[in-house]
Amino acid sequence: MSLDASRQRTARLVLTLALAALGVWIIQGFLPSLVWAGVIAIAIAPAYARIERRWPHLKRGALLPMLATTIVALVVLGPVALGAYRAAAEAQDVVRFIAGARDNGVPVPAWMFQLPLGSKPAVAWWQAHLATPEATRAELARFDNAYLLRHSQIVGKGLLHRSIVFAFTLVSLFFVLRDGDTLVSQMRRAGTALFGPRADRIGHQVVHSVRGTIDGLVLVGIGEGAVMVVAYVALGVPHPILLGAVTAIAAMIPFGAAVAFAIAAFLLLTANAVTGAILILVIGFAVVGVADHLVRPVLIGGATRLPFLWVLVGILGGVETLGLLGLFVGPATMAVLVMLWRELVEREAPELGAPARDPTIDHAR
Image (cartoon, rainbow, N blue to C red; front, side, top):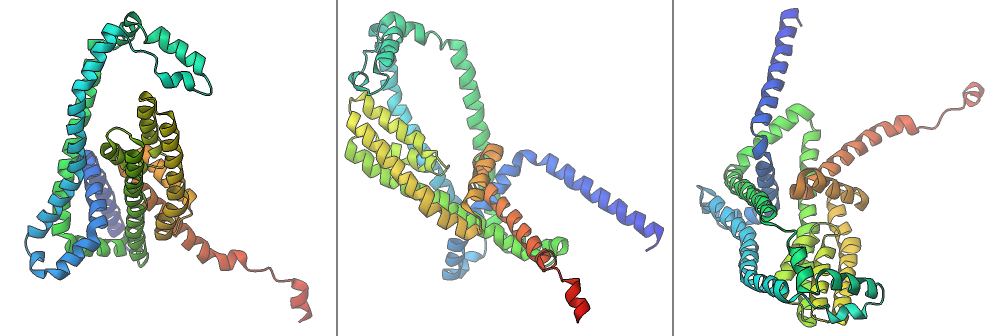
């Protein structure tokens, strides 16, 4: 290769990398939406393909992608709308409770006297901070108007940002579904050019990992929520359907369902149902134990070919780094890295693991 050709190739590479970095920097705010669209498309791909085979005329045009995108939007917005409706319905009760507490104080709950441990300190704290109108007003004074306004603005900005991300995710999902065949073909050609034959294995591993993670997190979380709804209804927990939906969402994050169980137990305690609160915790942790130690390792580990420890590390690390999106990106990333590591080890194993030859035997021969 001539010197001029080498310089041109280097210049093209530098220019390509610079343009790629500039492009990523420009669209960085929309990258989560694009990744979410890809994750959702991978998740619904089997059902989407069956519909295309069953009604091939829908494959042409934008009707089927629009229908699938609308269904995804309804599945996500339905629980959110239910939660907002219930929150609005409960807001008046909360306002009345605060007004009554300000005027009359909050009496010590009867269950607090029955605590096996720490009953006296808990009762003393409650009497000092909440039992009298003066103490209650002093506690409520900590939440002044400026404090509430500041946090309301933070919450409002967060909701607005997530609404924009969700809207752009739906737009991206529509185009991903409409042009899915073209995108897959282009990605295969690009992957082969960059990674060679290994590209198909990496792509399949990512797809299987995302689907396995969805099965292990989303479906198992929904199952936990359904089981706990039965327990909530049986034990008289207020708003069992809404709390069951919260449990299902929280259960998608490892150890997150415990927060929902604690809320349900606290609601029962406020109604002086100590036995019911204990039963909720026992049933909840039993359900979580079966789901996290038996069902999820089989679903996620089997699809990703990862030990569950690495699945857990991928999930928790992904959530800490990328938020909710990390639930799916984390395990998929770990699965690809472990696959590449195994290929490297297996390729080097014959050379590294071959038994050393004894020179005295060679000399004897």
